Length: 339
Image (cartoon, rainbow, N blue to C red; front, side, top):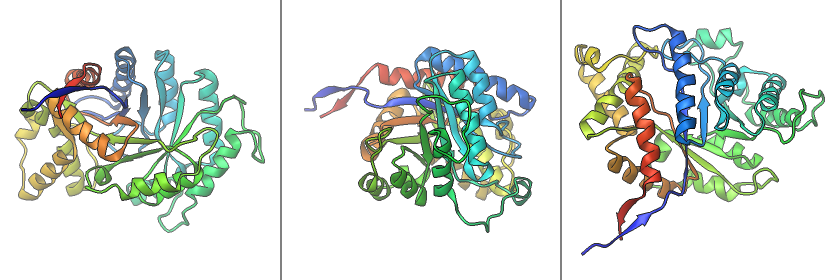
């Protein structure tokens, strides 16, 4: 005989929107859709809404997080808005500080600065950004310099001056977790680390974390693709466009626009493409609200996550809005769990 108890929501829920372009629509529509989704997320009650930085990618329209954050800030009034993230190797720390101090001055208490270390995906993009894979890794030093400008302690005074400065996060795996721990910064993690049986990397981050006034304790945000629908089959269909795009990027070397499931059904699936699609689908969480809540609770418990950042996308925007609503509802309406 199994009793049940109510599992109360213990994690914050947020959204990362990458401004995915869609076949048959202009890139500008992806940016408008991002703003509309942010407004919807605020109405639902999400904690944060973050945008991404990608350069020269057909499937993503967002190349300048500060510009898009400013537009979202103007259309919302409460939700935190930020970058997931600004890729530090592509920018001078002073410029990043000035951009986000200005955003904080415009939308006080609402701006987040997520920092990543990824270079451009292709050699032409890296050349256009004046970056080389052979250059030394200065990520930790760049973050320290950036913080000096945000705090008003740098060799140059970044303006406008605001207090307190916007909080910073590190998009991290491997060595990035070490950088975050040494700097006493919260981390955003995704990918394979979330599906491993062990939590060695996160345990090390928490053990070596150096407390600061701004961040006295470690803080972990986990980022996953999450799609909820009325049935598992329908949810899988919603997850298919992103999985198909990922499979095509591996085959063609270019991350494409999202396509409709009908068009995907009519495309040729080689065994290798099918394998990649299945692997991509397996890395996402999709299903009914109960399916998703159960799996998400399992990952949150294993990782000790403080917050979930849903990096979900699909071709059908109405279904995407419905999935956002269903995810938040699944935590606002506690579910029964076996004891």
